Length: 340
Image 1 (cartoon, rainbow, N blue to C red):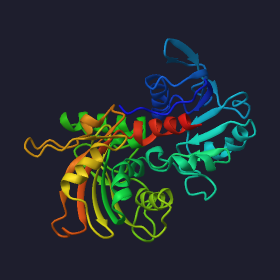
Image 2: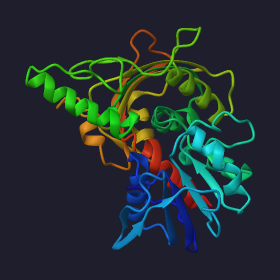
Image 3: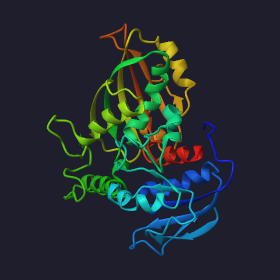
Image 4: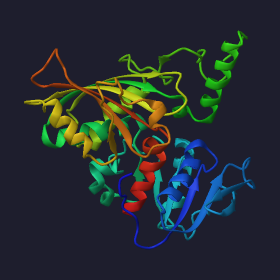
């Protein structure tokens, strides 16, 4: 695990959506990073209020999320959905508390920094009370793309994603488990969360398609990457697919460089020494990044590095797997909090 930046003094932290999949990972990451927490306030819907959750050796009672929940708090980590973020954002800000949001509510707001600390930590200083966490697929892709972009300017990215059930939260993860059990037992299963049977199947990411034929997840990857890299003209195309993997997203990335691609050896060296990445690139054993090995890991796994034989002068291919609930969500947000 890399060394992470941490505050020099303990902080009062509130977590909105604490009982959800990402909310639970917020707690796990704070513990694992030994983040200096003075007071931790866990916030949830009225339905979950009163339940208990553990932080280190302490039991903390979930409180109902209300406008006055952020009094005396320094940092609010949100993973409760866009509508909830928008409803409570001003309540957070008026308490001089910084909101770090995992939803899409403010990602494309020109006045809100969109941050992957390994890429654009300097943008954190531009915040006016709100900092947005990018989409999970964008974060994972940029961890691999940015270190190469620093030395060899990138002209175009073509990315295909293999996205796990964890991207849809507990309900989608449970639907994958239940539909798989039913399929193995040759029983009929009616999908309740997704439009299609998830067992032994894959389909276009379950977000609406716009007039261009791209779904919302693909548009997020394109626009968010351009914003984070401060390059609205960067050429990107994405195909996002939901696959029957429980946890951790994978991505096949084709990069076209502006002038010359690095050699495979140099690309390996750059990526092996980049923060947040672990090189997994063993051709002899055919061992490359896999979601089952990336699950639960703070670092994303990168490998399958090779020249694009259709474009050997300026093209490079690679493959990455990263835990969507960790680096794709909770870990990235807590890293941002560390800079505050």
